[in-house]
Length: 418
Image 1: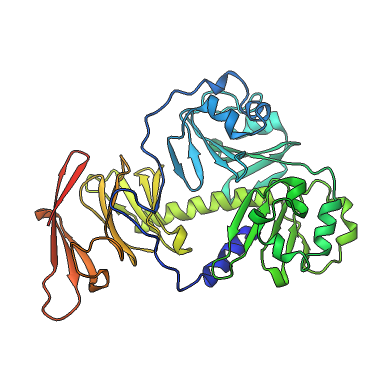
Image 2: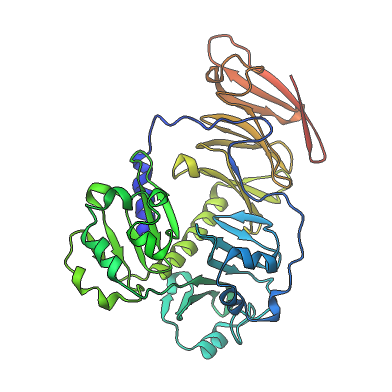
Protein backbone atom coordinates (compact mmCIF):
# COMPACT_ATOMS: atom_id res chain seq x y z
CA UNK A 1 0.00 0.00 0.00
CA UNK A 2 1.41 3.40 -0.96
CA UNK A 3 2.02 6.22 1.48
CA UNK A 4 -0.82 8.13 -0.14
CA UNK A 5 -3.27 5.29 0.39
CA UNK A 6 -2.22 4.97 4.02
CA UNK A 7 -2.84 8.69 4.45
CA UNK A 8 -6.28 8.43 2.91
CA UNK A 9 -7.11 5.43 5.07
CA UNK A 10 -6.15 7.42 8.14
CA UNK A 11 -8.33 10.28 6.92
CA UNK A 12 -11.25 7.92 6.60
CA UNK A 13 -11.17 7.24 10.34
CA UNK A 14 -10.56 10.84 11.29
CA UNK A 15 -13.11 12.84 9.29
CA UNK A 16 -15.12 15.40 11.20
CA UNK A 17 -18.46 13.96 12.22
CA UNK A 18 -19.97 17.42 12.45
CA UNK A 19 -19.35 18.28 8.79
CA UNK A 20 -22.40 19.86 7.22
CA UNK A 21 -23.66 19.03 3.74
CA UNK A 22 -22.72 21.41 0.96
CA UNK A 23 -25.54 23.69 -0.10
CA UNK A 24 -27.22 22.61 -3.30
CA UNK A 25 -29.72 23.99 -5.78
CA UNK A 26 -31.97 22.33 -8.29
CA UNK A 27 -30.07 23.81 -11.22
CA UNK A 28 -26.40 24.05 -10.24
CA UNK A 29 -25.47 21.30 -7.77
CA UNK A 30 -22.63 21.81 -5.35
CA UNK A 31 -21.60 18.25 -6.03
CA UNK A 32 -18.80 17.60 -8.44
CA UNK A 33 -20.20 16.12 -11.63
CA UNK A 34 -17.73 14.20 -13.75
CA UNK A 35 -17.85 13.60 -17.49
CA UNK A 36 -18.99 17.04 -18.63
CA UNK A 37 -21.47 17.04 -21.50
CA UNK A 38 -19.44 18.58 -24.27
CA UNK A 39 -19.26 17.93 -28.00
CA UNK A 40 -16.42 15.83 -29.29
CA UNK A 41 -13.67 18.04 -30.60
CA UNK A 42 -11.30 16.75 -33.23
CA UNK A 43 -7.83 17.14 -31.79
CA UNK A 44 -4.77 17.57 -33.95
CA UNK A 45 -3.28 14.21 -34.78
CA UNK A 46 -0.88 13.22 -32.00
CA UNK A 47 0.09 10.10 -33.88
CA UNK A 48 2.27 12.08 -36.32
CA UNK A 49 5.06 11.93 -33.73
CA UNK A 50 5.97 9.70 -30.82
CA UNK A 51 3.52 10.24 -27.99
CA UNK A 52 6.15 10.49 -25.26
CA UNK A 53 8.13 13.01 -27.31
CA UNK A 54 5.04 15.18 -27.69
CA UNK A 55 4.67 15.40 -23.91
CA UNK A 56 8.39 16.02 -23.44
CA UNK A 57 8.46 18.73 -26.10
CA UNK A 58 5.54 20.49 -24.43
CA UNK A 59 7.19 20.08 -21.01
CA UNK A 60 4.16 18.10 -19.84
CA UNK A 61 2.22 21.39 -19.49
CA UNK A 62 -1.55 21.36 -19.84
CA UNK A 63 -1.66 24.81 -21.40
CA UNK A 64 0.40 23.61 -24.38
CA UNK A 65 -0.96 20.07 -24.63
CA UNK A 66 -4.66 20.94 -24.78
CA UNK A 67 -3.99 22.80 -28.00
CA UNK A 68 -3.06 19.43 -29.49
CA UNK A 69 -5.49 17.08 -27.79
CA UNK A 70 -8.63 19.24 -27.66
CA UNK A 71 -11.26 19.38 -24.96
CA UNK A 72 -11.75 16.70 -22.34
CA UNK A 73 -14.64 14.37 -23.15
CA UNK A 74 -15.09 12.74 -19.75
CA UNK A 75 -13.30 12.06 -16.49
CA UNK A 76 -12.98 8.90 -14.44
CA UNK A 77 -10.88 8.22 -11.34
CA UNK A 78 -8.96 11.49 -11.74
CA UNK A 79 -8.11 10.86 -15.41
CA UNK A 80 -9.57 13.09 -18.13
CA UNK A 81 -10.20 11.35 -21.45
CA UNK A 82 -9.54 12.88 -24.87
CA UNK A 83 -10.59 12.12 -28.42
CA UNK A 84 -7.50 10.28 -29.67
CA UNK A 85 -7.58 7.43 -27.16
CA UNK A 86 -5.57 8.89 -24.29
CA UNK A 87 -6.52 9.83 -20.74
CA UNK A 88 -4.46 12.18 -18.60
CA UNK A 89 -4.18 12.78 -14.89
CA UNK A 90 -3.14 16.38 -14.39
CA UNK A 91 -1.29 17.26 -11.21
CA UNK A 92 -2.02 20.33 -9.11
CA UNK A 93 0.52 22.36 -11.13
CA UNK A 94 -1.38 21.66 -14.39
CA UNK A 95 1.23 19.27 -15.68
CA UNK A 96 0.60 15.79 -17.03
CA UNK A 97 1.47 13.28 -14.32
CA UNK A 98 -0.02 10.06 -15.71
CA UNK A 99 -1.16 9.13 -19.23
CA UNK A 100 -3.26 6.10 -20.13
CA UNK A 101 -3.24 4.91 -23.74
CA UNK A 102 -6.15 2.75 -24.85
CA UNK A 103 -6.68 0.45 -27.83
CA UNK A 104 -7.99 3.24 -30.10
CA UNK A 105 -4.73 5.22 -30.15
CA UNK A 106 -3.27 4.96 -33.66
CA UNK A 107 0.31 6.17 -33.28
CA UNK A 108 3.57 5.04 -31.72
CA UNK A 109 4.02 5.62 -28.00
CA UNK A 110 7.79 5.27 -28.17
CA UNK A 111 9.74 4.08 -31.20
CA UNK A 112 8.39 0.72 -32.35
CA UNK A 113 5.67 0.43 -29.68
CA UNK A 114 1.95 0.76 -30.45
CA UNK A 115 -1.20 -0.54 -28.78
CA UNK A 116 -1.01 -3.58 -31.09
CA UNK A 117 2.48 -4.62 -29.94
CA UNK A 118 2.69 -8.09 -28.38
CA UNK A 119 4.49 -8.76 -25.12
CA UNK A 120 7.25 -10.66 -26.94
CA UNK A 121 7.86 -7.76 -29.34
CA UNK A 122 7.70 -5.15 -26.62
CA UNK A 123 10.37 -6.82 -24.51
CA UNK A 124 12.45 -7.47 -27.63
CA UNK A 125 12.38 -3.75 -28.49
CA UNK A 126 12.65 -2.28 -24.98
CA UNK A 127 14.66 -5.03 -23.31
CA UNK A 128 14.06 -6.76 -20.00
CA UNK A 129 11.66 -4.74 -17.83
CA UNK A 130 12.88 -3.09 -14.66
CA UNK A 131 9.53 -3.74 -12.96
CA UNK A 132 7.45 -6.90 -13.02
CA UNK A 133 4.15 -7.60 -11.25
CA UNK A 134 3.05 -11.00 -12.50
CA UNK A 135 -0.20 -11.03 -10.53
CA UNK A 136 -1.46 -8.05 -12.54
CA UNK A 137 0.25 -8.88 -15.84
CA UNK A 138 2.23 -5.65 -15.43
CA UNK A 139 5.74 -4.77 -16.59
CA UNK A 140 7.48 -1.41 -16.59
CA UNK A 141 10.53 0.61 -17.61
CA UNK A 142 12.22 3.62 -16.01
CA UNK A 143 13.86 6.32 -18.13
CA UNK A 144 15.39 9.71 -17.35
CA UNK A 145 12.18 11.74 -17.70
CA UNK A 146 9.39 9.17 -17.72
CA UNK A 147 8.19 5.67 -16.87
CA UNK A 148 6.43 3.35 -19.28
CA UNK A 149 4.21 0.48 -18.10
CA UNK A 150 2.24 -2.12 -20.02
CA UNK A 151 -0.37 -4.63 -18.88
CA UNK A 152 -0.94 -7.87 -20.74
CA UNK A 153 -3.34 -10.78 -20.83
CA UNK A 154 -0.77 -13.36 -21.87
CA UNK A 155 0.61 -11.93 -25.16
CA UNK A 156 -2.18 -9.43 -25.83
CA UNK A 157 -1.60 -5.85 -24.72
CA UNK A 158 -4.38 -4.48 -22.49
CA UNK A 159 -3.06 -0.97 -21.94
CA UNK A 160 -0.03 1.31 -21.76
CA UNK A 161 0.57 3.97 -19.15
CA UNK A 162 3.19 6.70 -18.94
CA UNK A 163 4.25 8.71 -15.90
CA UNK A 164 6.31 11.88 -15.75
CA UNK A 165 9.57 11.61 -13.83
CA UNK A 166 11.15 14.71 -12.28
CA UNK A 167 14.77 14.70 -11.25
CA UNK A 168 16.32 16.72 -8.41
CA UNK A 169 19.51 18.72 -8.76
CA UNK A 170 20.14 19.81 -5.16
CA UNK A 171 19.49 18.14 -1.80
CA UNK A 172 20.30 21.06 0.49
CA UNK A 173 16.68 22.15 1.09
CA UNK A 174 15.54 18.55 1.31
CA UNK A 175 18.09 17.74 4.03
CA UNK A 176 17.21 20.89 5.98
CA UNK A 177 13.52 19.99 5.87
CA UNK A 178 14.16 16.40 6.97
CA UNK A 179 16.18 17.59 9.96
CA UNK A 180 13.43 20.01 11.05
CA UNK A 181 10.18 18.15 10.40
CA UNK A 182 8.69 19.01 13.79
CA UNK A 183 9.99 22.57 13.86
CA UNK A 184 8.68 23.28 10.35
CA UNK A 185 5.49 21.28 10.84
CA UNK A 186 2.99 24.15 10.82
CA UNK A 187 4.17 25.40 7.43
CA UNK A 188 4.92 22.03 5.86
CA UNK A 189 1.39 20.85 6.61
CA UNK A 190 -0.13 23.83 4.78
CA UNK A 191 1.49 24.02 1.31
CA UNK A 192 -1.02 26.50 -0.11
CA UNK A 193 -0.21 29.16 2.50
CA UNK A 194 3.52 28.46 2.64
CA UNK A 195 4.28 28.21 -1.05
CA UNK A 196 7.66 29.94 -0.75
CA UNK A 197 8.77 27.95 2.28
CA UNK A 198 11.41 25.23 2.24
CA UNK A 199 10.80 22.50 -0.31
CA UNK A 200 7.84 24.32 -1.90
CA UNK A 201 10.01 27.31 -2.77
CA UNK A 202 12.68 25.03 -4.27
CA UNK A 203 10.45 22.60 -6.21
CA UNK A 204 7.15 24.39 -6.58
CA UNK A 205 3.85 23.14 -5.18
CA UNK A 206 3.48 19.40 -4.49
CA UNK A 207 2.14 17.21 -7.28
CA UNK A 208 -0.81 16.27 -5.06
CA UNK A 209 -2.16 17.47 -1.70
CA UNK A 210 -4.57 15.52 0.52
CA UNK A 211 -6.65 17.09 3.27
CA UNK A 212 -6.70 15.12 6.51
CA UNK A 213 -10.36 15.36 7.53
CA UNK A 214 -10.88 16.10 11.20
CA UNK A 215 -7.22 17.02 11.66
CA UNK A 216 -7.19 20.13 9.51
CA UNK A 217 -3.73 19.68 8.04
CA UNK A 218 -2.53 18.49 4.66
CA UNK A 219 -0.47 15.54 3.55
CA UNK A 220 1.31 15.97 0.25
CA UNK A 221 3.50 14.13 -2.20
CA UNK A 222 5.80 14.53 -5.15
CA UNK A 223 5.50 11.00 -6.59
CA UNK A 224 7.22 12.26 -9.74
CA UNK A 225 10.31 12.87 -7.56
CA UNK A 226 9.79 10.13 -5.00
CA UNK A 227 8.88 11.72 -1.67
CA UNK A 228 5.73 11.98 0.48
CA UNK A 229 4.85 13.83 3.72
CA UNK A 230 2.05 12.57 5.97
CA UNK A 231 0.88 15.96 7.23
CA UNK A 232 0.78 15.18 10.97
CA UNK A 233 2.46 18.29 12.39
CA UNK A 234 3.50 17.02 15.81
CA UNK A 235 4.78 13.66 14.63
CA UNK A 236 5.30 14.11 10.90
CA UNK A 237 6.82 11.43 8.68
CA UNK A 238 8.76 12.01 5.48
CA UNK A 239 9.08 9.02 3.15
CA UNK A 240 11.86 8.97 0.57
CA UNK A 241 11.31 6.35 -2.13
CA UNK A 242 13.92 4.47 -4.09
CA UNK A 243 13.32 6.60 -7.21
CA UNK A 244 14.44 9.86 -5.58
CA UNK A 245 17.18 10.79 -8.03
CA UNK A 246 19.83 11.90 -5.50
CA UNK A 247 19.05 9.36 -2.82
CA UNK A 248 22.69 8.37 -2.48
CA UNK A 249 23.46 11.95 -1.36
CA UNK A 250 21.16 11.82 1.67
CA UNK A 251 23.49 10.12 4.15
CA UNK A 252 23.16 13.14 6.48
CA UNK A 253 19.56 12.21 7.26
CA UNK A 254 19.80 8.42 7.26
CA UNK A 255 19.21 8.29 11.01
CA UNK A 256 16.84 11.23 11.37
CA UNK A 257 13.71 10.60 13.41
CA UNK A 258 10.59 10.05 11.29
CA UNK A 259 12.47 9.89 8.00
CA UNK A 260 11.74 6.65 6.19
CA UNK A 261 13.85 5.37 3.31
CA UNK A 262 11.49 3.10 1.41
CA UNK A 263 12.78 0.47 -0.99
CA UNK A 264 9.60 0.91 -3.03
CA UNK A 265 9.53 2.97 -6.22
CA UNK A 266 6.73 5.54 -5.79
CA UNK A 267 5.74 5.50 -9.46
CA UNK A 268 5.67 1.70 -9.74
CA UNK A 269 3.65 1.65 -6.53
CA UNK A 270 1.23 4.18 -8.02
CA UNK A 271 0.74 2.08 -11.14
CA UNK A 272 0.26 -1.16 -9.20
CA UNK A 273 -2.34 0.53 -7.02
CA UNK A 274 -4.12 1.95 -10.06
CA UNK A 275 -4.30 -1.43 -11.82
CA UNK A 276 -5.39 -3.23 -8.67
CA UNK A 277 -8.05 -0.63 -7.87
CA UNK A 278 -9.40 -0.88 -11.39
CA UNK A 279 -9.77 -4.63 -10.97
CA UNK A 280 -11.37 -4.26 -7.53
CA UNK A 281 -13.97 -1.89 -8.95
CA UNK A 282 -14.70 -4.14 -11.93
CA UNK A 283 -15.20 -7.09 -9.58
CA UNK A 284 -17.50 -4.93 -7.44
CA UNK A 285 -19.46 -3.93 -10.55
CA UNK A 286 -19.78 -7.59 -11.53
CA UNK A 287 -21.09 -8.48 -8.08
CA UNK A 288 -23.01 -5.40 -6.96
CA UNK A 289 -23.59 -3.38 -10.12
CA UNK A 290 -27.13 -2.18 -10.82
CA UNK A 291 -28.12 -2.81 -14.45
CA UNK A 292 -30.15 -0.33 -16.47
CA UNK A 293 -33.43 -1.72 -17.85
CA UNK A 294 -31.88 -2.23 -21.30
CA UNK A 295 -28.89 -3.99 -19.63
CA UNK A 296 -26.37 -1.74 -21.39
CA UNK A 297 -25.17 0.36 -18.45
CA UNK A 298 -24.02 -0.58 -14.95
CA UNK A 299 -24.28 1.77 -11.97
CA UNK A 300 -22.03 1.00 -9.00
CA UNK A 301 -22.24 2.68 -5.60
CA UNK A 302 -18.73 3.49 -4.36
CA UNK A 303 -19.13 4.78 -0.80
CA UNK A 304 -16.43 2.96 1.15
CA UNK A 305 -14.04 5.89 1.48
CA UNK A 306 -14.47 9.47 2.66
CA UNK A 307 -17.88 11.09 2.34
CA UNK A 308 -16.39 13.70 0.00
CA UNK A 309 -15.14 10.99 -2.37
CA UNK A 310 -18.32 8.88 -2.33
CA UNK A 311 -19.60 8.50 -5.86
CA UNK A 312 -21.69 6.53 -8.31
CA UNK A 313 -19.63 4.89 -11.05
CA UNK A 314 -21.07 4.11 -14.47
CA UNK A 315 -19.74 1.40 -16.81
CA UNK A 316 -20.67 -0.10 -20.11
CA UNK A 317 -21.56 -3.78 -20.02
CA UNK A 318 -17.92 -4.63 -20.92
CA UNK A 319 -16.81 -2.51 -17.90
CA UNK A 320 -15.48 0.34 -19.98
CA UNK A 321 -15.77 3.40 -17.69
CA UNK A 322 -18.43 5.93 -18.69
CA UNK A 323 -18.32 8.51 -15.90
CA UNK A 324 -18.91 9.32 -12.24
CA UNK A 325 -21.28 11.38 -10.15
CA UNK A 326 -20.15 12.78 -6.79
CA UNK A 327 -23.30 13.66 -4.83
CA UNK A 328 -21.30 15.03 -1.90
CA UNK A 329 -22.12 12.35 0.68
CA UNK A 330 -22.33 8.60 1.12
CA UNK A 331 -24.71 6.99 -1.40
CA UNK A 332 -27.46 4.77 0.01
CA UNK A 333 -29.34 3.70 -3.10
CA UNK A 334 -29.56 3.99 -6.88
CA UNK A 335 -32.73 3.26 -8.86
CA UNK A 336 -33.03 3.42 -12.66
CA UNK A 337 -36.01 5.47 -13.85
CA UNK A 338 -35.32 4.52 -17.49
CA UNK A 339 -32.19 3.56 -19.46
CA UNK A 340 -30.44 6.87 -18.71
CA UNK A 341 -32.06 8.59 -15.72
CA UNK A 342 -31.26 7.39 -12.20
CA UNK A 343 -32.68 8.39 -8.84
CA UNK A 344 -30.10 8.33 -6.03
CA UNK A 345 -30.38 8.89 -2.30
CA UNK A 346 -27.76 9.82 0.28
CA UNK A 347 -27.81 10.75 3.97
CA UNK A 348 -28.01 14.38 2.87
CA UNK A 349 -29.99 14.40 -0.35
CA UNK A 350 -32.14 12.81 -3.03
CA UNK A 351 -31.67 13.64 -6.68
CA UNK A 352 -31.78 12.51 -10.29
CA UNK A 353 -28.95 12.25 -12.82
CA UNK A 354 -28.84 11.59 -16.57
CA UNK A 355 -25.93 9.37 -17.59
CA UNK A 356 -25.69 10.70 -21.16
CA UNK A 357 -26.21 14.46 -20.76
CA UNK A 358 -25.05 14.67 -17.13
CA UNK A 359 -28.04 16.78 -16.17
CA UNK A 360 -28.31 16.66 -12.40
CA UNK A 361 -31.13 17.86 -10.18
CA UNK A 362 -31.28 17.76 -6.40
CA UNK A 363 -34.90 17.06 -5.45
CA UNK A 364 -34.57 17.10 -1.69
CA UNK A 365 -31.85 18.11 0.79
CA UNK A 366 -31.66 19.96 4.11
CA UNK A 367 -31.74 23.24 2.14
CA UNK A 368 -33.86 22.29 -0.87
CA UNK A 369 -37.26 20.76 -1.50
CA UNK A 370 -39.30 22.39 1.28
CA UNK A 371 -42.22 22.52 -1.16
CA UNK A 372 -42.22 18.70 -1.19
CA UNK A 373 -42.06 17.96 2.54
CA UNK A 374 -41.90 20.28 5.51
CA UNK A 375 -38.55 18.98 6.71
CA UNK A 376 -35.88 16.89 4.98
CA UNK A 377 -35.41 14.90 8.18
CA UNK A 378 -39.06 13.82 8.09
CA UNK A 379 -38.14 11.54 5.17
CA UNK A 380 -37.05 8.09 6.24
CA UNK A 381 -36.85 6.50 2.80
CA UNK A 382 -37.57 6.86 -0.89
CA UNK A 383 -39.12 4.40 -3.34
CA UNK A 384 -39.96 4.44 -7.03
CA UNK A 385 -43.07 3.16 -8.73
CA UNK A 386 -41.64 2.95 -12.26
CA UNK A 387 -44.89 1.59 -13.73
CA UNK A 388 -46.79 4.69 -12.60
CA UNK A 389 -43.87 7.14 -12.94
CA UNK A 390 -43.97 8.06 -9.27
CA UNK A 391 -41.35 8.78 -6.62
CA UNK A 392 -42.62 8.01 -3.12
CA UNK A 393 -41.10 9.72 -0.08
CA UNK A 394 -41.80 7.65 3.05
CA UNK A 395 -42.38 9.92 6.03
CA UNK A 396 -41.76 9.38 9.74
CA UNK A 397 -44.67 9.13 12.13
CA UNK A 398 -47.56 6.71 12.41
CA UNK A 399 -50.15 6.54 9.64
CA UNK A 400 -48.27 9.04 7.53
CA UNK A 401 -48.98 8.42 3.84
CA UNK A 402 -45.94 8.76 1.53
CA UNK A 403 -45.49 12.01 -0.36
CA UNK A 404 -45.95 11.32 -4.07
CA UNK A 405 -44.01 13.11 -6.80
CA UNK A 406 -44.78 12.06 -10.37
CA UNK A 407 -42.40 12.40 -13.29
CA UNK A 408 -42.57 12.28 -17.07
CA UNK A 409 -39.60 11.41 -19.29
CA UNK A 410 -39.48 12.62 -22.89
CA UNK A 411 -36.20 11.73 -24.60
CA UNK A 412 -33.44 13.17 -22.41
CA UNK A 413 -35.82 15.49 -20.56
CA UNK A 414 -37.53 14.84 -17.25
CA UNK A 415 -40.41 16.84 -15.76
CA UNK A 416 -41.90 16.58 -12.28
CA UNK A 417 -45.41 17.21 -11.01
CA UNK A 418 -46.41 17.44 -7.38
